[in-house]
Amino acid sequence: MLRLGIEREQQGDLAEAERLYAAAGEAGIADAMNRCGDLMAKRGDDEGAEQWYRRAAATGDAFGAYNLGFMARQRGDDAEAEGWYRKAAAAGDKDAALELAVTLAAQGRPDEAEGRDHAAARGPADVDRRFFWLIPPAVSLSITLFLLPIAIALVFLSDFSNESCGSVADCPKDFASLDHTGWLIDASGIVAIVQWLPAYFLPRVLRLALAAVPPLLAVAAIVNAWNTPIGQ
Image 1: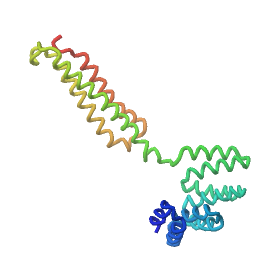
Image 2: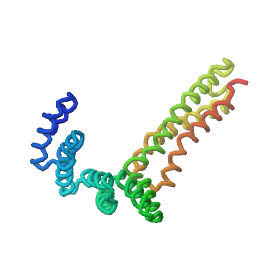
Image 3: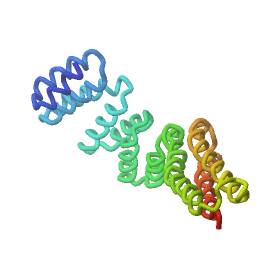
Image 4: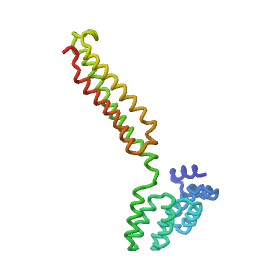
């Protein structure tokens, strides 16, 4: 019912969409309750919309509570709006936390408002582990993939820059240096990939330190290859 209601709404058949949302809402789907309330509010039936929002909020739905807070604030009832915004914010709705801060500021309670504003800006406590842990290894891999081709190109240029070194015996130090560069390239690529495995579980400082290793190894490979002119 909910999916069909969304399709009808997208097609512009709002009456049928409202009917389908109401049927899904009667089945206990909070999203459908909110959508039904939205359509009622759009056609001016605020009383009907509020009833659906209350039913959604009764299921613990944060958006239903947010909608009730918005309606209460629209009619000037800041006390009721505060209560609904608090419930929605406690359920994890960041928009409700921001609206609560605005409501508190309008009531002359700036200290409480500032605290709520900061809480909304921070978001869920686990957001770092759910998303931001990906950033250091992703940036590290991107930089490493940019640097490694440079190092590899320099190895080939050094290797074929002069024909006087046909074997390791002719230029042992230079070939040893290039061999060392090869090890640096391999290590850089391996660490850039393997770092993803422990990154989620590591503290932020260790995660950043590990992410710095592959680019540094790639830079070391570039410097080593640059300073190895075969046969010169």
